[in-house]
Length: 140
Image (cartoon, rainbow, N blue to C red; front, side):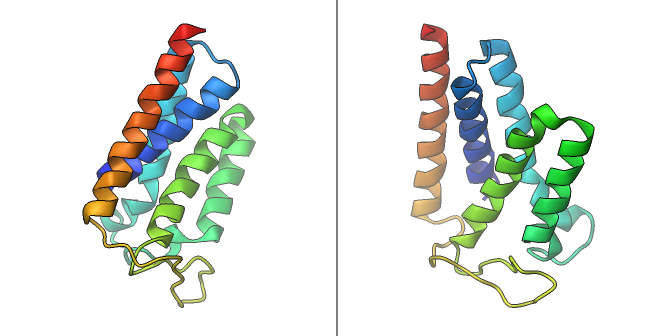
């Protein structure tokens, strides 16, 4: 669900910013960037594309990452990890994703239900991880 993707992106962005010893203000900006990138694959719905189609593939991740590298190389890890976190989380669901698009076969690692209890636990866990990262940056 959107909340899980957003929370995971935020946690990853904060964790990465903390590892690179970014000031808190930068870390917040990077966390928000990663959070936004974690939501991008679901723009397929707004673009009237097949949901969990091309935007949920390694090809899309590669193209997004190349675009980030070409325009702003310093942002590449945040963009790639945010986008990739979305693919990974959807890879855990019953429906899976066509990670090898244009091959239409969907792959999955587990059979979690979107919107189920585990999905909610993942969202809460990611928010706790994000908070932990921020608290750690404040103590520096």
